[in-house]
Length: 323
Image (cartoon, rainbow, N blue to C red):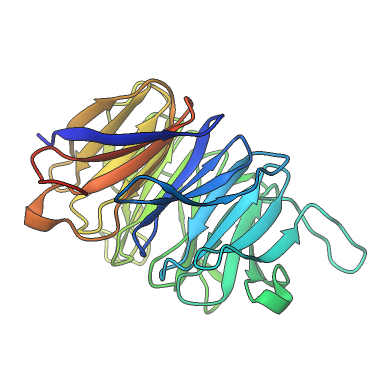
């Protein structure tokens, strides 16, 4: 059993739809109130705030250095934020269509951790690769086709930058190889929309969180038959409503999930079982482990955000002072 205790909580004026714990050890929270806040993970104080946008922020990501954050608003305004200077270095209105280049409003976005590009997905069910360079931000570099015109719910680069995963409104998961711009695997593990995807730090495992109340772990290397593309290797059931968010701990031992059933669960990946259930006051829209490895083999720390507009910091009980 892993016991977690609340460290602190901080509020937005509306639901917190996204949380990221960056490699530079700051926390980012994105809200339906249109704002993004950067927090000092030790003091719990706000260090920077992006002024509220007209529409809520539905997608949030950060690069492997912790220097940049990428976010996308409800209508499809994608922005690159320099977390060191506070400057917005790129803006792309993905909803603007032109005769020269057809476009679609982005819904979910992900920064490539190893390069100056980002991925987006939306209504077409494809993944678009864009420039993340300051002078050409948003320019299209490639289109990765899923072959299905189902709404793209979520996309996420692997930590090694070699792949990008995308999930659809009908439950499919697509893995694309970035170097060859090709579809390498398709998983049909879920029966309903997949709301969130998370990679292990070694880029070998992918966990998915779905409206079918389940999380499924995939090994993207080799299937049980020895063929590339493994499909599901473990299923985690126990939530009583939609699973909205998921993450894998930096040591690859644990997974974390947030649900519309107003709980979070910590899962032991090897045991295929929940080791802790943590009640919350409302739907838990986003969860993120601290990327720094945890000392003393504890469960480490994580941050969560939900319907009540509060971001909460958690750690394993008995793991010592601070986070």
